[in-house]
Length: 548
Image 1: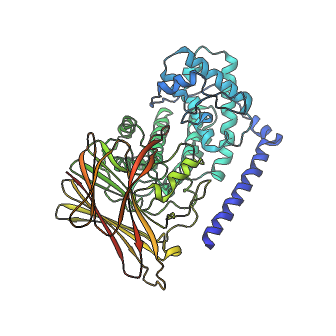
Image 2: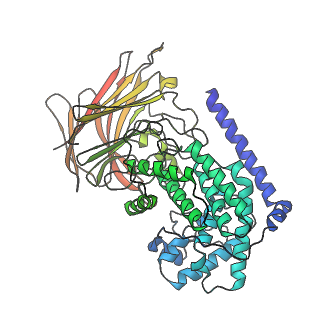
Image 3: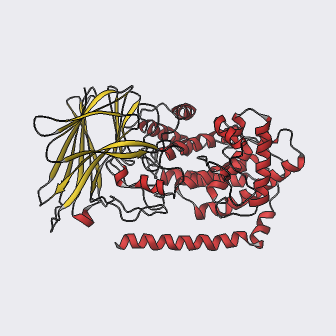
């Protein structure tokens, strides 16, 4: 309780600090300080190897948003951040002069309305992304533009870059600092007399790599989507250093070599990412492109000791289970309470999933996806295994989380445990999953037990949830001879499967939802096993998933 209270107070102080800082940044003295930065040309226009999406570009051409009024969005919202200008790639992907002209118009509108300071649009990681995209797409949207427009763009880039250099170390950490430091490297390479910013950005980046990217290559946030994004950032930094004839960074190079295999380890059979801790499936071809650009050929780790995701590939079956500690404070903004949850695919088809997240971090649907009940794991008294703050971050969290793995005559057994329910209910959870050598026989065991020093044994209700992918069909449900239950389910490309459970628990099929893509929420179903845990002796729930 004391630790959770301390974190809450810390977050309150941080919120007050941001408001006071915002008032200073809007002031005349600070704006005068930024105004001393001048730029009239570029030394380098960085190469941008990442493709855009033409359909998103067409939606922007139809008027998806504008910077000319308080309500930026005009119609149906797109899963993008208008202030970061990453969508310039999408306009470029339309291959039209209209896209180029609209890009210039929206940049001018942004400078008119938000070019001095804005509490959201001038957050360091967004400033960085914006100046990177303005620089990388400079030749595209400035082709045929008047000299006055070019001057305004370069002047704005210089002002934003100075702000970025001032605030990055003080206001960012983790993935956000990586992104902000990348921006400093870019402007230091591209603007005349700005090399000091390149060295500052690279020093910040290398420090963050050494302290926030684990030795196994995983990022502190434990989010597959951020793993992908940070790897792309590191690849871009490596490219810009080479293009500006700077010495390569051994720290960045080693980080790429470590992060790429970890990204491979977070892919399911369809090539997309597992949806843990605020992540999305992402496009498989984009992940392929990132891994190819990395140049790293390392195999995915089966049990990375620091990041904690356990991966089993057997036959055509892939299983990824989360047996790692929640992200630390400061890296937990989008963290989920999904301890010991797992996802499963057969061939290129997902079968068991978590509910996923929503692209707007502080929305109700994003919060719903963060709860323990939105994960394929065991839940006690419909409570979360870690305390979730609605505006992001974790409060109370487990003190002990453990993961193990062993081979068993050609099969693999993965195991995890945590004490997230011990403070409230005096209960610990252990999960074991056995995967046969051909991947067609998966047996699970969820165990509830009392801590060694337990002095009470409160009765608690529990539920073990298995969220199904929306394309999975439930074909039948029956009772078998020993009193257990069988659910037949199938999916095209994965074949026919059976879910088995023993007697002693109630089995139901309930409604659920799936948010694996950024802009899509789908109805789906979940299998739920429920019961009560009474007394001091451990309670075990056995289940199995077998191909039929």
